[in-house]
Image (cartoon, rainbow, N blue to C red):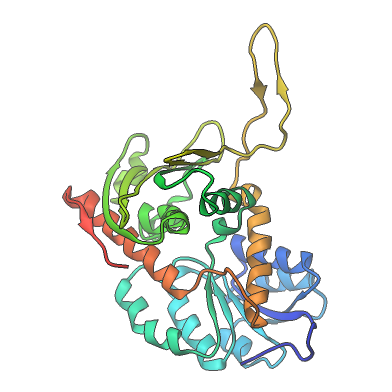
Amino acid sequence: MSAPDQPGAPVRFGLIGTGRIGQVHAGSIARLPDAVLTHVCDPFVDGARKVAAAHEGARVSADAAEVFADERVDAVIVASPTATHVDLLAAALEAGKPVLCEKPIDLDLSRVDALRERAAEAPVPVALGFNRRFDPHFAEARGRVAAGEIGRLEHLQITSRDPAPAPAEYLRSSGGIFRDMTIHDFDTARFFVPDIVSVQASGGNVFSEEIAGIGDWDSVAVIMRGRGGEFITITNSRHSAYGYDQRLEVFGSEGLIEVPNVGDTTVRLHTAAAVESRRPYQNFIFERYAEAYLLELAEFIRLVRGEESRSPGFEDGRAALVLALAAEESARTGRTVDVDL
């Protein structure tokens, strides 16, 4: 297993993929004193050069094999397109490099399952990029639920609406709203209710003919049941006129916990025209979850060092995909789909 040269030395990262999410991870590495970026890889090598330029001493390559062969790399972050994830995960395991991979592992469950046993038996860890587990607001809510502050959890409500759809070119290859967008909410649901046994979903096209034209939905609703009878509901939309809408509510036998939307300020204005007027909500995923991405990487560093870590693993990635596929099946057939995670 690859490890830093000396105890306490910064973990040396190889980054594969320098699109938006790759740049976020590079920024997180720069902010953490116990992390350093030593190798940047992208087939579009100009993007790799641009990211590496901000990290003195980072090598640049267009071939991921060079990252896995680099003795200066202790751990790898896979931030490349989804279709490359399985092969890159396999290469990381073969090279003995701990790996943090963005979601989803793949769009096809059979490809995920083909790697499942190998990932389980590997001497190096695999972590999945479900950063919302590390959002301080959601993490506090989950901790307080676990501490019994609202008694027995009965109903979890998750709301997730994007400010605007991604470009059509991206959406065509994304695997659809359940595997691309709702998959984060499926993992958030399992953060609170790990054992989910059934999925019922409905999809609609309420505002975008373009999304309808590629055979996908712009709005979906999901109802799931936990093994203990818990209800979980998820509401998604590809647009939101008032900003990035990210909320959850946990209802229990003894009370309620709410996590409202996050803005840049808590200041409210009261006038004759309006009361409690506030600034718009944050308008982009990388604003709303900036701290979550940083904490996600810090937790992965603990995992790399063999310390106790809360990083979600391969099985969490697989479970979220199972739920996404069940939701898609339900939305297309109108039936409730039983799942075994």
